Image (tube, rainbow, N blue to C red):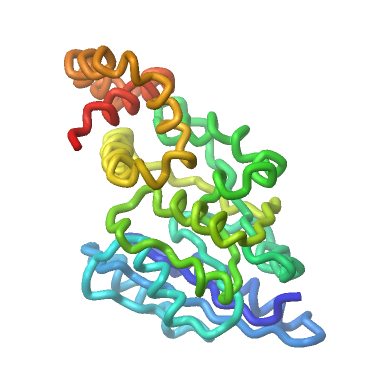
Amino acid sequence: MITELSILIPCYNSVCLDTVKRLQQLCERVAYDAPDGFSYEIIVADDASTDTLSLEQNQAISLLRNCTFLRKEQNTGSAATRNYLADHSRYPWLLFLDSDMQIPGMDFIIRYLPYDQYDVVNGGIAVGGSPNPSNLRYLYEKHSEPRHTIDHCNAHPYQQFRSTNFLISRACFTHCRFDERFTRSGYEDVHFGKQLCETRATIMYIHNPLILCTFESNDDYIIKCERNLQTLHRFRDELSDYSPLLTLVRHLSPVAPLIRLTHRLLGPLERRHLTSHHPTLPLFHLYRLGYYLSIRS
C-alpha cells in the first residue's frame, strides 16, 4: 500500500488552483482514514507562462497546506518540466497529472494506493462534456476511446502510454526520465513509453480516469497537431515502432510522392474545412498524413 505520495502537475497558461484544492481535499480524506498514516505533497510547476492572470491566481496554491507553486523562468517544454517536478519532490511515489483535466468522484487518489507492486500505474482519461460535433479535438478523442480501453492498453502497455494521468515509483523514474530533447509538446510520452519498455518496467492500466472537458478551438488544435507532427518527424527513427502514423507511412512509401503532390494542391482547402464548424475525421487523418510526408528533412 502506498503511504507517501507526491502529486506533480506541469502547467502553462492555465489556472489549476481549483484542481489543487480538489486534490488536497481528497488527500486529506485519505490521511484522515488511513490507519498507517498517509503523507502527501502537491507541486505545480509553471513552465514560464505568458498569461499574467493565470500566474497571479496560481500563486495562491502555495498558501494551501502541503502545496507548492513553482515558477520556471524559461520555457523548456513539458518533458523537462516533469523532470523538474520530480527533482523538487520528496516522496517515493510520483503521480503526474495534466493541469487541464477534471477529477471525478471522491476516490481518485485512493484507487491508486493499492498498486505498489507495479513500477507504473496509468489511470487514463475519459471524454466528458456535451457532444460537440463541430469541435475537431472532441471528435478525435471520442473516436479514439475504443483504442484506449483497459484491456487493450494492458495488452500493449508500452505502445499505449499517455502521460496525462499516471503513477510511477521514484526508483523507476530515476532510470527512466522524460527525454528533454522534446522541447515542444507532442510525443514525449510516446518516447517515455519506449523507455519503459527498454527498462522492462512493469505497467498496470486501471480505470481511474481524469475527465477531458475542455477542447481547444479547431484552429488551435490544427496548429498543435502540425507542431506535434514536426516533432514526430524529427524523432521518426526512434519512434518507428510506437507510432501508428509511422507504420502507415512505411506501408504507403510507394505512393508517398502522390500523397505529397495531393497535399500541396489540396492541403490548404483541407485545412480550411478542418478549421470550420463542420470538420470530418477522415479528412483530418488524410491531412495529417499529407502534412507529415511533406515535412522536409
